[in-house]
Image 1 (tube, one colour):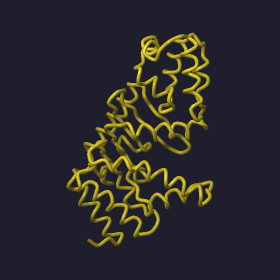
Image 2 (spheres, one colour):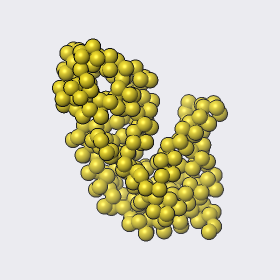
Image 3 (cartoon, helix red, strand yellow):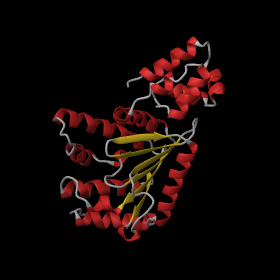
Image 4 (cartoon, helix red, strand yellow):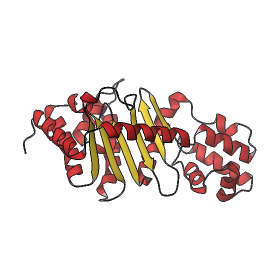
Amino acid sequence: MGNTYGDWLRQQREAAGLTQEELSDRAFMTRSHIAHIEAGRRVPSREDARRLDTALGTGNVLSSFLPQDDEAVADYFEAVLALEQQAVMIREFGLTYFPGILQTKEYATAVLGSAFPPVSDEECDRRVVTRLERAKILDDPVMPVVWALLDETLLRRPVGSQEVMAEQIMHVVRLAEAGRIRVHVMPFGVGLHPMMQSMLTLMWFEDQPPLAYTEGQRLGKVHDSPSVVHELQSRYDLALSDALPLKESLALLRATAKDYGHHD
């Protein structure tokens, strides 16, 4: 999608002689939200697009111009990459893989190298670099605040070699022990829990409402409907209440890394 949608919105707004502030009043949206959409940092929801069409008198042009399902996977993920950089708090749930911002280079290479249809070595390298760029948000010692809820499944499924798994797990342990992230493991013994349908990322910001991102097979979606975001936040909180406390989670992570061959 590039920033075509944002450019088009700006052109429609300027043609109507409106400032971002004036459009935000008419569309019942924040000015910063509109600025993010115009700059290509955020993909509008269908409800956003309907409100913008109404405010600008553009019929259903902005609604119908939204990317369709097959296009939306990459486009929404591009928006998530930008949003991660702006978030003041991120809460991740990892079901099958460690969340992207927590992945080591070797783990990311193993994950991305298993893509189907297969990708070239050059494309795999490019995706690994992108993933490592995302992880740089953890270079700041304080912001964003990051919580990671990890299903025990991802600890038990080997990705890459034994050494890759051991180092990946210890990378998370070191981040947690340094106080940079908070990590909780959802143990097998809990059985079914509210988060088993897909991975989930929750994000909070200084100047715009919180949102959620879910991802599954060929499907990635940003949710910014307040009722949907609240529901997903509640599911996360409910699952977190059944997870192991921090100290016990770190003990399980260390023990699992030892099973993979890590030695202190």
